[in-house]
Image 1 (cartoon, one colour):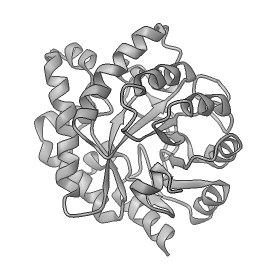
Image 2 (image 1 turned 120 degrees about the horizontal axis):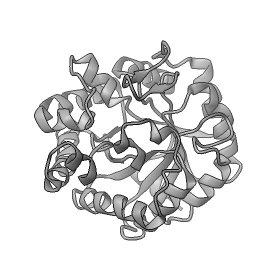
Image 3 (image 1 turned 135 degrees about the horizontal axis):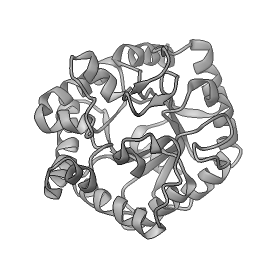
Length: 300
Protein backbone atom coordinates (compact mmCIF):
# COMPACT_ATOMS: atom_id res chain seq x y z
CA UNK A 1 0.00 0.00 0.00
CA UNK A 2 1.39 3.41 -0.98
CA UNK A 3 1.90 5.76 1.98
CA UNK A 4 0.75 9.37 1.96
CA UNK A 5 4.39 10.37 1.72
CA UNK A 6 5.11 8.24 -1.35
CA UNK A 7 1.86 9.30 -2.99
CA UNK A 8 3.08 12.89 -2.72
CA UNK A 9 6.83 12.59 -3.20
CA UNK A 10 7.40 9.14 -4.65
CA UNK A 11 9.83 6.46 -3.47
CA UNK A 12 13.49 7.12 -2.86
CA UNK A 13 15.44 10.02 -1.39
CA UNK A 14 13.90 13.50 -1.35
CA UNK A 15 15.86 16.77 -1.48
CA UNK A 16 14.46 19.59 0.67
CA UNK A 17 15.55 23.17 0.09
CA UNK A 18 17.94 25.15 2.32
CA UNK A 19 17.67 28.18 4.57
CA UNK A 20 15.40 30.74 2.92
CA UNK A 21 16.85 33.53 5.06
CA UNK A 22 20.35 32.43 4.05
CA UNK A 23 19.49 32.56 0.37
CA UNK A 24 17.79 35.94 0.73
CA UNK A 25 20.90 37.26 2.46
CA UNK A 26 22.99 35.90 -0.40
CA UNK A 27 20.77 37.98 -2.66
CA UNK A 28 21.59 41.09 -0.66
CA UNK A 29 18.59 41.29 1.67
CA UNK A 30 18.78 42.19 5.34
CA UNK A 31 16.59 39.77 7.30
CA UNK A 32 17.49 41.13 10.75
CA UNK A 33 13.93 42.25 11.35
CA UNK A 34 11.34 40.98 13.86
CA UNK A 35 9.36 39.56 10.92
CA UNK A 36 12.50 37.94 9.46
CA UNK A 37 11.78 36.54 5.97
CA UNK A 38 8.19 37.73 6.43
CA UNK A 39 9.41 41.30 5.99
CA UNK A 40 10.91 40.49 2.58
CA UNK A 41 7.69 38.69 1.69
CA UNK A 42 5.73 41.86 2.47
CA UNK A 43 8.00 44.30 0.69
CA UNK A 44 9.60 42.28 -2.14
CA UNK A 45 7.63 39.07 -2.78
CA UNK A 46 9.35 38.70 -6.15
CA UNK A 47 12.67 38.32 -4.31
CA UNK A 48 11.25 35.52 -2.19
CA UNK A 49 10.10 33.84 -5.40
CA UNK A 50 13.61 34.19 -6.82
CA UNK A 51 15.13 32.64 -3.71
CA UNK A 52 12.71 29.72 -4.01
CA UNK A 53 13.67 29.43 -7.69
CA UNK A 54 17.33 29.22 -6.69
CA UNK A 55 16.53 26.11 -4.69
CA UNK A 56 14.40 24.64 -7.48
CA UNK A 57 17.31 25.16 -9.88
CA UNK A 58 19.62 23.53 -7.33
CA UNK A 59 17.55 20.34 -7.45
CA UNK A 60 15.18 20.62 -4.48
CA UNK A 61 12.09 18.41 -4.56
CA UNK A 62 10.37 20.49 -1.86
CA UNK A 63 10.48 24.23 -1.14
CA UNK A 64 9.32 25.61 2.20
CA UNK A 65 7.31 28.83 2.28
CA UNK A 66 8.26 32.13 3.94
CA UNK A 67 5.55 31.76 6.58
CA UNK A 68 7.74 30.56 9.47
CA UNK A 69 7.73 33.94 11.25
CA UNK A 70 4.25 35.07 10.15
CA UNK A 71 1.53 35.29 12.79
CA UNK A 72 -1.14 37.75 13.87
CA UNK A 73 0.60 38.30 17.19
CA UNK A 74 3.94 38.95 15.52
CA UNK A 75 2.48 41.35 12.97
CA UNK A 76 0.56 43.28 15.61
CA UNK A 77 3.76 43.61 17.66
CA UNK A 78 5.39 45.08 14.54
CA UNK A 79 2.59 47.64 14.19
CA UNK A 80 0.69 45.83 11.43
CA UNK A 81 -2.95 44.67 11.47
CA UNK A 82 -3.75 41.03 12.12
CA UNK A 83 -5.35 40.71 8.68
CA UNK A 84 -1.97 41.55 7.13
CA UNK A 85 -0.59 38.37 8.69
CA UNK A 86 -3.35 36.30 7.08
CA UNK A 87 -2.66 37.96 3.74
CA UNK A 88 1.06 37.20 4.13
CA UNK A 89 0.38 33.56 4.94
CA UNK A 90 -1.60 33.21 1.73
CA UNK A 91 1.04 35.14 -0.21
CA UNK A 92 3.77 32.81 1.06
CA UNK A 93 2.09 29.85 -0.63
CA UNK A 94 1.29 31.80 -3.79
CA UNK A 95 4.91 32.99 -4.06
CA UNK A 96 6.27 29.47 -3.69
CA UNK A 97 3.77 28.25 -6.29
CA UNK A 98 5.02 30.89 -8.69
CA UNK A 99 8.60 29.65 -8.26
CA UNK A 100 7.68 25.99 -8.76
CA UNK A 101 5.21 26.39 -11.62
CA UNK A 102 5.90 23.97 -14.48
CA UNK A 103 7.86 21.58 -12.24
CA UNK A 104 7.07 18.65 -9.98
CA UNK A 105 8.52 20.45 -6.95
CA UNK A 106 6.18 20.39 -3.96
CA UNK A 107 5.30 23.36 -1.76
CA UNK A 108 5.44 22.84 2.01
CA UNK A 109 3.82 25.58 4.08
CA UNK A 110 6.01 26.43 7.05
CA UNK A 111 4.52 26.53 10.53
CA UNK A 112 7.23 27.64 12.94
CA UNK A 113 7.14 27.46 16.74
CA UNK A 114 5.52 30.00 19.02
CA UNK A 115 8.94 30.92 20.34
CA UNK A 116 9.97 32.40 17.00
CA UNK A 117 7.72 35.44 17.55
CA UNK A 118 9.43 36.29 20.84
CA UNK A 119 12.83 37.09 19.23
CA UNK A 120 14.73 35.82 22.26
CA UNK A 121 15.84 32.37 21.13
CA UNK A 122 12.84 30.63 22.72
CA UNK A 123 12.48 28.35 19.70
CA UNK A 124 15.71 26.75 20.93
CA UNK A 125 14.48 26.37 24.52
CA UNK A 126 10.72 25.68 24.54
CA UNK A 127 8.83 25.63 27.83
CA UNK A 128 7.26 29.03 27.09
CA UNK A 129 5.06 29.11 30.17
CA UNK A 130 1.90 29.20 28.01
CA UNK A 131 -1.09 27.00 28.61
CA UNK A 132 -1.99 24.23 26.21
CA UNK A 133 -5.07 26.21 25.16
CA UNK A 134 -2.99 29.31 24.38
CA UNK A 135 -0.65 27.31 22.16
CA UNK A 136 -3.61 25.70 20.40
CA UNK A 137 -5.14 29.11 19.69
CA UNK A 138 -1.86 30.52 18.38
CA UNK A 139 -1.26 27.69 15.93
CA UNK A 140 -4.90 27.13 14.93
CA UNK A 141 -5.36 30.57 13.39
CA UNK A 142 -2.25 30.16 11.21
CA UNK A 143 -2.98 26.60 10.20
CA UNK A 144 -6.51 27.44 9.09
CA UNK A 145 -5.28 30.17 6.73
CA UNK A 146 -2.42 28.10 5.34
CA UNK A 147 -4.58 25.04 4.69
CA UNK A 148 -7.06 27.23 2.81
CA UNK A 149 -4.15 28.40 0.62
CA UNK A 150 -3.77 24.76 -0.52
CA UNK A 151 -0.06 23.94 -0.25
CA UNK A 152 0.96 20.36 -1.01
CA UNK A 153 1.79 19.70 2.62
CA UNK A 154 2.65 21.42 5.89
CA UNK A 155 6.18 21.75 7.26
CA UNK A 156 5.71 22.04 11.01
CA UNK A 157 9.28 22.84 11.95
CA UNK A 158 11.80 23.75 14.64
CA UNK A 159 9.46 22.60 17.41
CA UNK A 160 11.54 22.55 20.62
CA UNK A 161 9.14 20.94 23.00
CA UNK A 162 6.76 17.98 23.14
CA UNK A 163 4.25 20.22 24.96
CA UNK A 164 4.05 22.39 21.83
CA UNK A 165 3.81 19.22 19.74
CA UNK A 166 0.80 18.16 21.81
CA UNK A 167 -0.91 21.45 20.97
CA UNK A 168 -0.09 21.05 17.28
CA UNK A 169 -1.51 17.53 17.24
CA UNK A 170 -4.79 18.94 18.54
CA UNK A 171 -4.76 21.67 15.89
CA UNK A 172 -4.02 19.20 13.09
CA UNK A 173 -7.25 17.36 13.86
CA UNK A 174 -9.05 20.17 12.03
CA UNK A 175 -7.21 19.38 8.78
CA UNK A 176 -6.99 15.59 8.50
CA UNK A 177 -6.69 15.62 4.71
CA UNK A 178 -3.60 17.86 4.62
CA UNK A 179 -0.39 15.83 4.97
CA UNK A 180 2.28 17.26 7.23
CA UNK A 181 5.70 16.60 8.61
CA UNK A 182 6.70 17.61 12.11
CA UNK A 183 10.35 18.22 12.86
CA UNK A 184 11.90 19.07 16.21
CA UNK A 185 14.91 21.18 17.14
CA UNK A 186 17.35 19.23 19.29
CA UNK A 187 20.03 20.19 21.82
CA UNK A 188 22.13 17.05 21.35
CA UNK A 189 21.84 13.54 19.93
CA UNK A 190 19.19 12.48 22.45
CA UNK A 191 16.92 15.35 23.46
CA UNK A 192 14.73 18.11 22.12
CA UNK A 193 15.82 21.66 22.86
CA UNK A 194 13.50 21.57 25.88
CA UNK A 195 15.34 18.51 27.17
CA UNK A 196 12.82 15.74 26.48
CA UNK A 197 13.85 12.43 24.88
CA UNK A 198 13.42 12.71 21.12
CA UNK A 199 11.65 9.34 21.17
CA UNK A 200 8.93 10.77 23.44
CA UNK A 201 8.51 13.83 21.23
CA UNK A 202 8.17 11.72 18.09
CA UNK A 203 5.62 9.50 19.82
CA UNK A 204 3.47 12.57 20.43
CA UNK A 205 3.78 13.73 16.81
CA UNK A 206 2.74 10.32 15.52
CA UNK A 207 -0.64 10.55 17.23
CA UNK A 208 -1.85 12.97 14.54
CA UNK A 209 -3.18 10.91 11.60
CA UNK A 210 -2.13 13.59 9.10
CA UNK A 211 1.55 13.35 10.07
CA UNK A 212 3.25 11.72 7.08
CA UNK A 213 6.85 12.12 8.31
CA UNK A 214 8.81 13.15 11.39
CA UNK A 215 12.35 14.29 12.08
CA UNK A 216 14.61 17.15 13.12
CA UNK A 217 15.63 20.48 11.65
CA UNK A 218 17.73 23.54 12.55
CA UNK A 219 19.91 21.23 14.63
CA UNK A 220 23.69 20.92 14.63
CA UNK A 221 24.61 18.30 11.99
CA UNK A 222 26.93 16.59 14.50
CA UNK A 223 23.88 15.26 16.35
CA UNK A 224 21.79 14.13 13.41
CA UNK A 225 23.01 10.56 12.92
CA UNK A 226 22.20 9.59 16.51
CA UNK A 227 18.88 11.43 16.39
CA UNK A 228 17.81 9.62 13.23
CA UNK A 229 18.67 6.28 14.81
CA UNK A 230 16.64 7.08 17.89
CA UNK A 231 13.69 8.25 15.81
CA UNK A 232 13.84 5.13 13.65
CA UNK A 233 13.68 2.99 16.80
CA UNK A 234 10.14 4.23 17.53
CA UNK A 235 8.57 4.77 14.11
CA UNK A 236 8.45 3.46 10.57
CA UNK A 237 7.33 6.82 9.20
CA UNK A 238 9.67 8.56 6.75
CA UNK A 239 12.33 10.61 8.55
CA UNK A 240 12.96 14.20 7.46
CA UNK A 241 16.18 16.02 8.42
CA UNK A 242 17.38 19.47 7.51
CA UNK A 243 20.11 20.58 9.89
CA UNK A 244 21.61 24.03 10.09
CA UNK A 245 25.25 24.70 9.29
CA UNK A 246 26.28 24.36 12.94
CA UNK A 247 26.76 26.80 15.79
CA UNK A 248 24.52 28.50 18.35
CA UNK A 249 21.89 31.14 17.66
CA UNK A 250 22.53 34.50 19.32
CA UNK A 251 19.10 36.21 19.60
CA UNK A 252 20.62 39.56 20.62
CA UNK A 253 22.74 39.87 17.50
CA UNK A 254 20.36 37.85 15.33
CA UNK A 255 23.13 35.61 14.05
CA UNK A 256 24.91 32.31 14.60
CA UNK A 257 27.70 32.65 17.16
CA UNK A 258 30.38 30.55 15.48
CA UNK A 259 31.66 30.11 11.97
CA UNK A 260 29.38 27.65 10.21
CA UNK A 261 30.22 25.17 7.48
CA UNK A 262 27.63 25.47 4.68
CA UNK A 263 28.45 22.10 3.11
CA UNK A 264 27.21 18.52 3.23
CA UNK A 265 29.97 15.99 3.92
CA UNK A 266 29.26 13.00 1.62
CA UNK A 267 30.32 10.52 4.32
CA UNK A 268 27.98 12.12 6.85
CA UNK A 269 25.09 12.17 4.36
CA UNK A 270 25.71 8.46 3.78
CA UNK A 271 25.44 7.90 7.54
CA UNK A 272 22.13 9.74 7.66
CA UNK A 273 20.73 7.65 4.84
CA UNK A 274 21.99 4.44 6.44
CA UNK A 275 20.41 5.43 9.76
CA UNK A 276 17.03 5.84 8.07
CA UNK A 277 16.66 9.38 6.73
CA UNK A 278 14.45 9.63 3.63
CA UNK A 279 14.36 13.39 3.04
CA UNK A 280 17.39 15.66 3.55
CA UNK A 281 17.84 19.40 3.20
CA UNK A 282 19.36 22.36 4.98
CA UNK A 283 18.26 25.06 7.37
CA UNK A 284 20.00 28.24 8.57
CA UNK A 285 23.38 28.73 6.89
CA UNK A 286 22.72 26.31 4.03
CA UNK A 287 22.30 28.11 0.70
CA UNK A 288 21.34 26.99 -2.80
CA UNK A 289 24.88 25.90 -3.63
CA UNK A 290 24.86 23.56 -0.62
CA UNK A 291 21.55 22.10 -1.80
CA UNK A 292 22.93 21.65 -5.31
CA UNK A 293 25.86 19.70 -3.87
CA UNK A 294 23.46 17.62 -1.76
CA UNK A 295 21.22 16.87 -4.73
CA UNK A 296 24.26 15.71 -6.69
CA UNK A 297 25.25 13.37 -3.87
CA UNK A 298 21.78 11.87 -3.49
CA UNK A 299 21.33 11.33 -7.23
CA UNK A 300 24.83 10.20 -8.15
